[in-house]
Image (cartoon, rainbow, N blue to C red; front, side, top):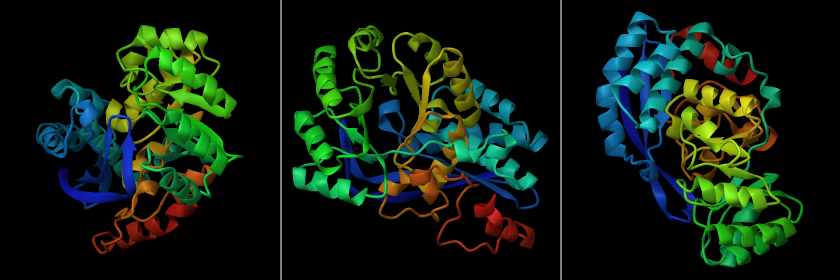
Length: 362
């Protein structure tokens, strides 16, 4: 068992701006787990500075986590639970690289058994919810309308707020998309007073729910807002791993899971189970990622109430084939990891080439 990595740079079609800043260029780390007979599992790390990660720190984490993963998987390639446990013991935090290794290990098992990961879990891909498409904070109303027009095929829009033009933005989006489902994400930018004032306006414009209105640490503030809000409140930055979920019961209505935060597919499943036991809504989202990164989370999408798997759709240069094009719009069926556009399948055996051809029919 061998683990390798490479870094690729991707660019968004438009500058992707949220309340705490933005960028147009993003560096992602692909992880490949190669078995003794050449079968590969792929995963992707999308490090995010908000959670203390950079491309360099993710690669440094791989130097510590790689030997752990090689040891565990060389003993038993199916030891997925042990893999995440051992990685968490070896290194705290560093969720993006842990999730990349976890995803690659799951992908390898799926290829070994010739089934997609969602079938390992007994899930029905037809139950996957529609994904939203995110509209970042624009510089002008003209730019905003252009982005809404570009999202014509998406029936659900997530609007990034947290600027001094929030009221203007939500009114302009509703004018441009009078019939679409709208959701709002303030990325922890509001005060409680501001949140309640904005929620009154959001109700007028038919918004479905509000994601992370207050700073991540302000749980009492979130409780205060939720008790007075006529819209559901979803926690994102406040909810990183499964142990955070119970603290949020009664504080918010639901949670938003991201693999880059929680550190692996097994942890994501624990978060879902915990939230369900507490009667909470479950959503999952993503960072700016390629189709490879998105595909990992898509496998558990049938367990979700809401999905925000648009990271790759925001890219101008997704380096992978669009294996998940349907899931963004129609809740389509997840597949195994995408292949790079610029790589041939000559390293695969004929049997594996046939598997790749059948992927979309799984």
